[in-house]
Amino acid sequence: SQVKQNDTVKVHYTGKLADGQVFDTSEGKEPIEFTLGQGQLIPGFEKGLLDMKINEKKTINIPKEEAYGEPRAELVQEVEKSQLPEEIKPEVGMGLVSKTPDGQEMNLVVSEVKEDTIVVDGNHPLAGKDLVFDLEVVEIK
Image 1 (spheres, rainbow, N blue to C red):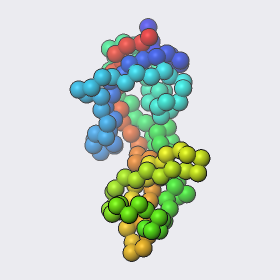
Image 2 (image 1 turned 90 degrees about the horizontal axis):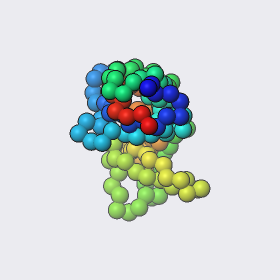
Image 3 (image 1 turned 180 degrees about the horizontal axis):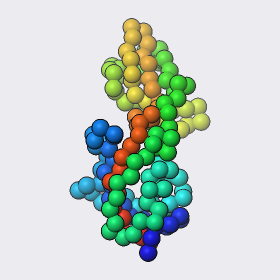
């Protein structure tokens, strides 16, 4: 049997940047399990699995448009340091979580620290990057 839309699959994967740097892998862990077509994973990942067979391995290249898209300028904001909890000492690269007015959590990364403000970036860390995945289908349910 082959992977098709709406199948639930178990997949081992290694995600790399174009330069070969690994950013995520299931090596040494359980494979991920998900159902295709529910938007749980980036479009290029799901598309790459279509028609694969059990135990088949392949490497796919996912352009940024089918991954996390381009970085969006509106997700970069300057925030007064006085708005941060007192115990936080912001540093470049530090992760912060902000709550939107409707209660959703948003992950931010400090991209710049100025005298009275910090610049935070809410873009996905992989936005703007083409990705490479090594895939192996372990199970099709």
